[in-house]
Length: 302
Ligand SMILES: [Zn+2]
Image (cartoon, rainbow, N blue to C red; front, top):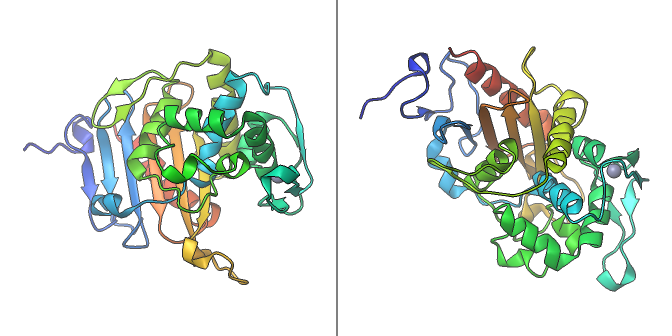
């Protein structure tokens, strides 16, 4: 099979860096179980893979990456609108009938009052606990199905605030699920049958605008700040998941977490989508510098 390289136009087989080393010889993925893929959003072909043999071993909860689907559902059903603000004091007290204790935001200082796009940018859990509660389990699960994220049985009976923040133990998505999800958001619901099947999702343009605005803000000044190489407008969403075997431990370290990172660029008409999974580490500390390097590498090719 003829294997083309970037310089030949990215139209052939995907480049694969099996050992996790970028083409210029710098170590990129630090753990042997990490994985990354870049998809060409115009052809539906994989443009680059890092440690492709790891993809089939990865099943993890989506974490905060699910908040894009929740935001879309909340806007599309009319339970929220782009200008509505919700206040985050650092925690959320669930309605008594859910039988859940006080749920924390990831930032105990609280985020104050945020619009939906700002809540996406800062990944405010309180905002999404509330939207999940207002949507309800049935509607939220249907929307997750539409975005290709509701396939685990655990998602069908889960309390909707936990589903809406992607924290559910036993919920597994794989990198291909998240690549199709990222691509669907990047392409504003326009389907594409390529090496990855990108689903058709029909939503009003202002809904897609809100998602793109929130994810661009995340890359500019939110939880993914620092991801965009100079001059490249990037949209991004991170997700950090506590390894299930570490649940309930009193002291947690960075290596007790796994990280997802989704990105697409350049805006406003994205050409590339990235999914990165790190077996150990928090998204901001570990995933952002790697994603930035991948985005720069792909974007510098002719
Ligand atoms: Zn918050």
